Length: 400
Ligand code: GAF
Image (cartoon, rainbow, N blue to C red):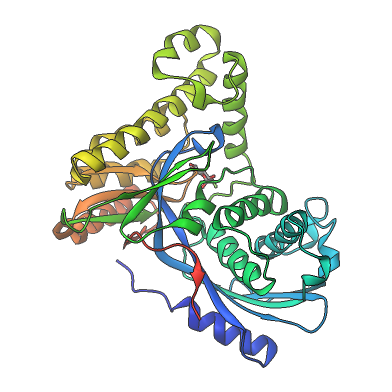
């Protein structure tokens, strides 16, 4: 188990003063997320059940007297400085000119300006801004450090520019930044969780209507903790596997003649098997059964409490390992070891191809489970995992 990282609010504040020599107008923060269940269902118009975690990204922001936008972060020492007007036409065509981390805040600024103008805001409303960003959300761990930086920046600019956009609007702006400025063809889950998270609860999101319901997790009352086992295997959703999985889902929906795999029921699967090749069928089967597992998990949490969801978490992992094929040996070992150590349930979380697994575990078994997983990794010759607990926390807000 690792020590807590330095608080991002203090770090962002100090970085801002270093950048500008002045106090920021305010600090805004947004959390990363863990997904309890519902993986790759978001871009299939389906259901997800994520929660915001207690690691956050903070943006310290101040209006400038001119039309420039400057961003600095603790990710590296670079400061990106450009005219606000230069954002137009920058994304997606010229994204390579921008250092990778800065595509997130600048992509948000670009998408938010476009959305605010479309909503009738006068172009002169956009003063220049200085932005300093710091985060304690682990990068590449499948905990959506990207949604955290998008949510913090979007919340800040919405206030500083008095754009009056809603949290759901800001989530959509974050997603647009991710898709077009960063180039990752992701769904809306992470941004919605980061914007709308609630303490000790998950967000049950219908990714078609964007309607949400708060679902109490009840982990504390049940004496349970949520363990994150970050394998250290890094992944990027702007390359390779994620886009291929998405394309397979679209192919499956097209063969079945539906708008999205959300429209396919578990009872339709025998017919689907006859219509498509084995790989496409298994991709489809993961999405269709995963949607049902989300619905079943919400029901189980509401009627029987968190101890009842273990088999659903386990089945979700098997489906991602065997049908969607987005797990890696490190994730499988973390899940198997946690289960053998007594976890109620365990699964990989996030987009896959690396990142983290989660395990729902009795409070008094947290340390022993972490030790077992660390030992199993050493025996397998894998790099030491980063293991810690997370709590469901509030979404994006202004801190000061
Ligand atoms: C990543 C994406 F950003 C999400 O939109 C979602 O598809 C997830 O992978 C898989 O469930 O986090």
